[in-house]
Length: 162
Length: 295
Image (cartoon, rainbow over all chains, first blue to last red; front, top):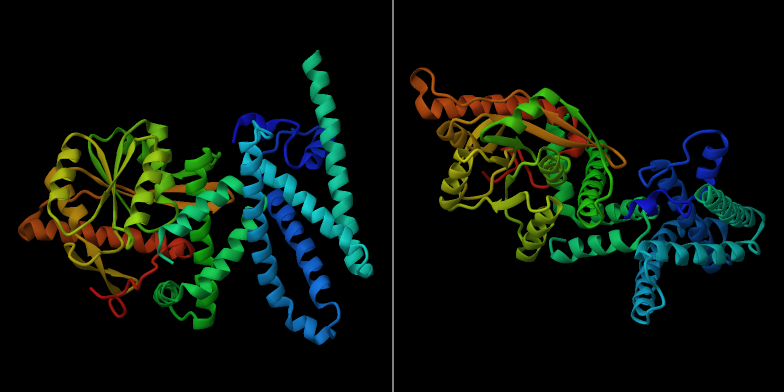
């Protein structure tokens, strides 16, 4: 990973960078941040887990749903393996067509992952109050992150212009 | 579970999966291997019952999971360093000893199947600008072996060379020449493979087979043995533990065998201390103790 990717305003999680910046701390955050890596990864998995649970087993009795929690974890895991593979093939195709240049595969995957998770979070909005709350939480986090990225990018350009 | 496919998959995942999804996927894969790599799991449980006396079998299954999880992290982080030169931080326990090693005119680094020894070798070669010859047990699968050797040499930017410990005598002469040229040779001293010279040492009150090669080499080449371990200390954080060098020398009537036995006994003491503190990173995926192992 290039250093510009690690430290630039386009960093994966702009929100914690912006918060750190506003609090007067160093906004330089790297992939070495264990908390961010684990929280976001777990949130992605949780949203898909809840969406699969709701999509496949919503008609079952609660006791049966409890039994089906473990298979859901496995389905969730397999789902992501397949999604990541398909995404990789799409990225390969986009590169071959000359559409994507200068962006790493992981970053492109990140775009797909956040889009898919957001779609699933939207699906959760229709699936009962608790699941809807999880969906709203994800959607709010994504928008806050995008907003933070824009603000950081704006700030970065302003500093560059000086 | 031993094919090169898993290593290639890992490389692919590190290049294609964003870093924030890696921890959870890695944990899910560890669960998979915990259930499907049954011989490794059984070996860990059996070894842990000796390392932690009085421990229950159930608790040792959880400990075995933790060890496998650490194993997954260390191989993933070593591959990540190879592929992306990702940043790692490390703390040195015994920095003056590491400096001694870096300035030694020929030395043997004796390590164990613990933490990320390949990442450690690459970091050492980079930090001190020294070449390392790494001797390790051959992989059961030829393609995996080639993949591993290429990975280590790539991580060390050519400063780390891998040799495989086989029954042949040629490697011993080759390593002796390297030591006499002032090179550093890194050997894993906690496990033997069939056909390789070994003697019996004691760990945790049990008999273990320890390779005699490093001690004989040190005696003949008159170089010190530095016990060195690379332990994972957290997310992209490592601890390099260096212990006092062991000098193999003839004294008294014991002769060569006595010198080797003495050095080996001192190595066993160090190894036992380090394993006791870091049992969760001792990747002994085969039975290590005499009651279980084929020695």
